[in-house]
Image (cartoon, rainbow, N blue to C red; front, side, top):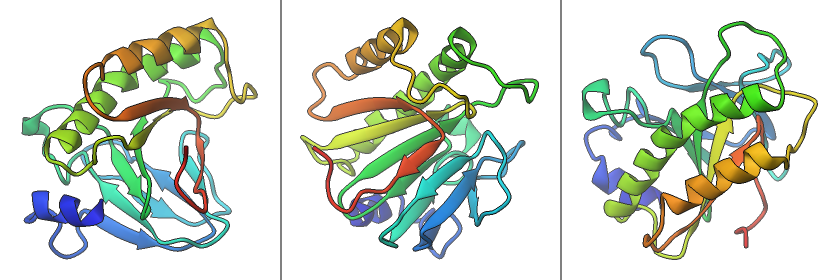
Length: 191
């Protein structure tokens, strides 16, 4: 998937402005406020709204800075970043609460619902550019802050997930919405 991405976004992918190659067994991804693109950093410091990536086998992971790098704000709303391995693509959108307080249940999924459009638009554009092949499983992460509810399989999530899947009706890919701030890079392709 990296080669079609580089071909499709040739100017943006020159050098390392919109991408980082990471092999750390654990790293964090943050979307800073303002117009700066996402970046990664190493623990132990961690903000509860950042994405923790567990990469136990030290696989090569490419962090692709989507919003404000591949796409500029004039091109419309897009998700914040994507993580790519040889077999898998993970799209990520961050939504931080106005106040840094623990939230759960309905509030958490209301913020996750705010992520859906940006994830959808980015994934659909990657499909139309043939970056994502037909039949691929695409994981869309809505990062809305850590809570004690992991995972939360309640009615709010089930309705949001079904709504997200319906947005891809007729598009030959499989999508899975994940509302979580921990991403585990698997050793091989997901089923």
